[in-house]
Image 1 (cartoon, rainbow, N blue to C red):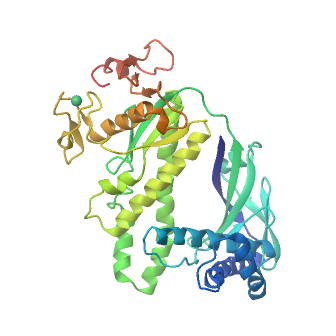
Image 2: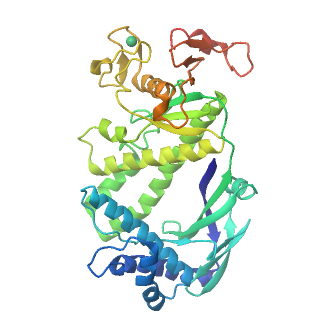
Image 3: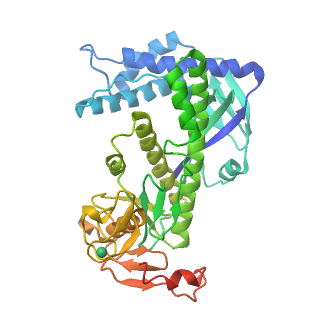
Length: 417
Ligand SMILES: [Zn+2]
C-alpha cells in the first residue's frame, strides 16, 4: 500500500526575492480565476476536460501573466478540479457558487519545484529562487528517509508569521500488515476519540466552542471593522494550526494504540454520522469547524496508520450508539443525553462513546464478506484486556506475556469486556 503524506517546511527566502514569490502566488490565483471565467464551451457550460481547458485558456494565461508554462498548467488544473466538483454538486441538486481562488498558495510540480534534502529551487514570475529549509527534527526524519519519493508541493504564505512554507507531498510503498485484528474507534464530540481498548482522547476543550480562540473569533466577527478582520485572519491561521496540532497528537496515539495491540485494522464510522449526531442548535461556524476537524482527524489517522501498514476502514454508523456492546440489545433509550450508556436488557453500564467504539470495531469483523473486498469474517476486535471474535467469544490476554503492561487491567476483563 502507498503511504502519502504532506510535510510542511518553512523556507528561508532571500529578502530581495520575497516579492517574486508574492507575485507568483498572486498571478497563480489570477490564472485559476481566469480559467473559471474563460473555461467555457460556446454554449456557456463549464469545460471539464483537461485537453479542452488547455486549448481554451493556455495561451490567454501565457499572455495575461508572467507565470512559467508549467505553473499555468498547474493553475488551470487546480481550477479544473474545483470546476468538476462544483458541477458534481450541481448535479446532486446542491446550490454552490463558482469556485474562486484567493488563498495565499500556489501548486508546484517536478518541473517547477526541485526538492532536495535541505533546500529547494522554486519557479517564479522572475526566474528561479533558491531557498533553504528551516527544519525541525520531525520534518528531517521524513526528508532523510530515502524510501520516500518526493512529489509535488505547494507554496504557501502565512500572513501571521510573515513567512513562506512549502507543503511537500511525499510517498512510499509500505507492506500491508498481516492479521485481522481490529481496533474500534468512536469519533465524537464529548471525547474527540475513544477506542475499543478503553483509551479516551479528549480535545482539551479546544474543538467544541468553549475555547479561547473561538470566543475571540466570534467577538471579532461581530465587530466587523477592518482591524478586526485583520486580526481575525491572523487568528484563524493560528487557531487552525492549534487544532491541527492536537489532532495530530490524538491520531498518532490512536495509531500507536493499534500498533501496541497488534491490530491490522482501525475501524471508524463513516463521517456522515457526526453531522447527524450534532445538536441542531449549534451555530453554523461551530458545525463547519466540527466537520472540518473530523475530516482532518480521519485523514491523519489514515496516513499515520499506513506508515505501520495498518488500514483504516469505515463501517456503517447505524445505531452504534444505541446497541449494547455486551448483549446486542438495541434501544434508543439505552443511552442518556449525558452520554452514559446503560443497557435496558442486561444492565451493562459503560461510557456511551466507549460502548460505540466497541460496536464500530465489532461491525468490521462481522460485516458480511460480500460487502467488503477483503472480508474480515474471522477477525478479532481488540479490547482493553482481551479480544473478541465475530461470534462474540472473548479471549483474555495472557497476563504473563510481556506485552501486557499491567495485571490490574486483566482483572477487570470479565466485567468490562
Ligand atoms: Zn445489554
